[in-house]
Amino acid sequence: MQLRIAVADPLPVFRHGVRRILHDAGFESDAPEDLAGWVRDEQVRAVVLTIRSETDWELLEELHHSRSEVVLVALLDQVSVAASVRALRAGAACVVARDASPSALSEAFAAAVRGQSLVPVEVLRALSRPPEPASDRPTPDQRKWLRGLAAGRTVGQIAVEAGYSERMMFRLLRELYTRLGAENRTDAIVRAQARGWL
Image (cartoon, rainbow, N blue to C red; front, side, top):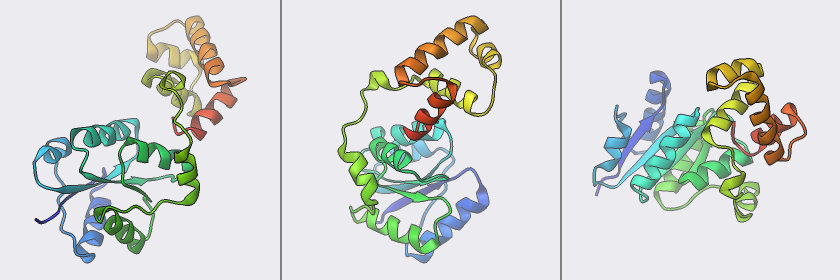
């Protein structure tokens, strides 16, 4: 049975380049508009998915949960241990830097479709540690607040976007900092970044 492959990236030229790299490695691929619908088809498949936003992280998890046998390859702008662990725990078979060489992408993809994964040792070590309890993780709204803080937004701006008074937002952020074990705003951003939440 032929392996069906999809490539999903917001940039058409990049998407075409990835498809060309896969073609040169002997794999034919599609670039479907409705990736979630495409994955629901019953044929064996693999997906190369660029992860650039929280929505992309959610799509990675959705694809994995909809068909766990689908081989998911995550392309990340910033490959770190925390981001790699997050991608693997979300269902990716391997993680590749978005700026990787064509041969590195081909090698990682070929290994993944053979049921193997090229994973750095430090990522394996991090994976061997138990995941943090879900109660310690910020909610999607709290992650949005942290991303706003990291982008330099004021507490007042975040409060308006979230629909809270500035005073209430200060209180909610203080509770979040305490839960993260952070002393202040900067410490909370650093801790969130290290855990792959931004």
